[in-house]
Length: 385
Image (cartoon, rainbow, N blue to C red; front, side):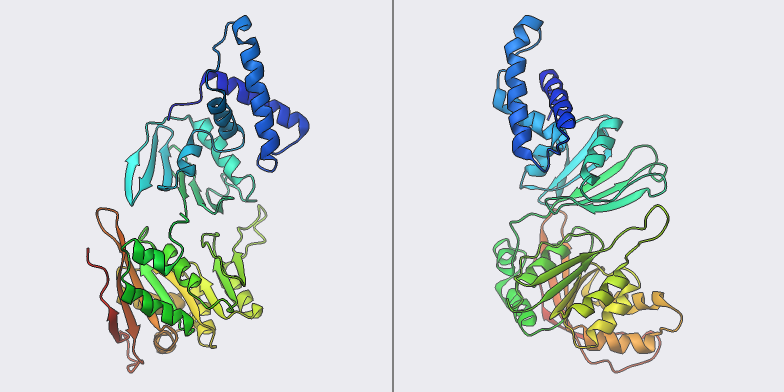
């Protein structure tokens, strides 16, 4: 998509000035912003010939362009609106990519450094989060549920690195996964029964393997009377259950106070009478708090990065050791074996296709020696590539 046309840029600046004068946020009052844009486009055409500037031939298209600049995310907005685009990322102002169907492609689009910074600031405006020299990383949820991740120099070499991961509404249930070929009907039935019976499920896989999508489908398979509490660093899960509370962590303030960690959220979630506790991603010492919660009889569901389902169990047994020196494997291994009922491993092949590769069931732990592994049996062999 080319940069904004000269008439659209001029109209957008006038609309922006009017909004500032009225002290209105176009994101909160989109109809008023649209009325302003239409009025300014007509005004531009009324005086264009007399001023010797280009006339806008397609007024409706110009209005959309102006609104994308003022209220949306400028030239990125069409790609963010495109339901086939899964993710968008910026490596440099002239190196912008998207992913469709798990396959990346470079966009014929070039911005400027200041335009990238303006877009990020606009994205962060409604989140209450910031990115600056003291906080060079930021994770935030956009109003549509997409996840924004930004890293700035001097952590990056020169340019701002921006990722927007979208969560597409097309896959919301186990049935959708079966229809898309990511899961067989037999595998879906195993998972549906596990969620109905209150069993704890760990979803593993590499980055972009479809873990969060599968976790959302598992939550959708819970009985409607279940109260679900989700815990995430940044809101990513799209949960449509009748009784759900979603919690997200918080970064520290400029003074270094006010941080809310996943460990704190897991503990708070247990005070909210959950029928199922969901942790968006286990990657640190919060694994200990999750294990302790599961051992109290609260069913859980979570994702974890791993190369296989069995590796996921080993990682879940290792992460609690980060919580302190008084935690050892003699406690953790039996706790993992007793707490996790199923591990579901997701994969993405070279063509971008995502699939459930296997489902395993941990067996009762029998060895308490160093290096002991949790025995498992395979319940499901996965969709063949």
